[in-house]
Image (cartoon, rainbow, N blue to C red; front, top):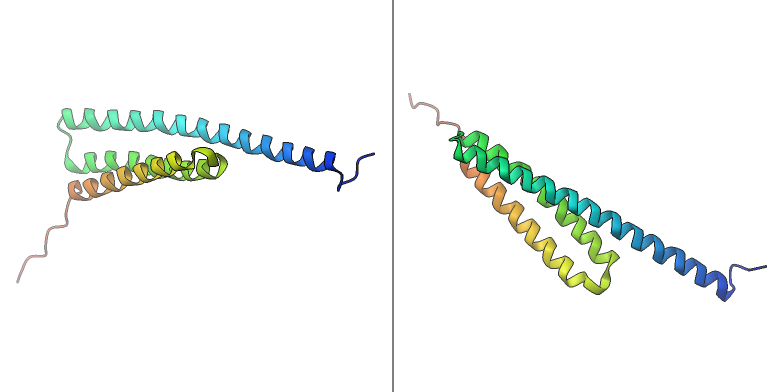
Length: 122
């Protein structure tokens, strides 16, 4: 019979923890793949809107969608940095890049968004 303090018990707990960590990493990688596909689709939609002469408001909205996807990707990369410490540096770099791209998209969307005209002077 194995006791909770026995070496075999500690080893099996460590194995279970390691397996759970690896399984979570696989799930996070799968989510990143879904996000990348969605981001590519949204970017394609933006290119179509631009090519077809859509107005600034429509293009601004189209820019906000990939920004949200990139923010979620940044969160997933942060999670991977903890799950895969041997490659944490690369995950931190990917986090920063995703956040920078999201910020750029939001800034450009703000420039495109229709501005409220000033109230007429009386």
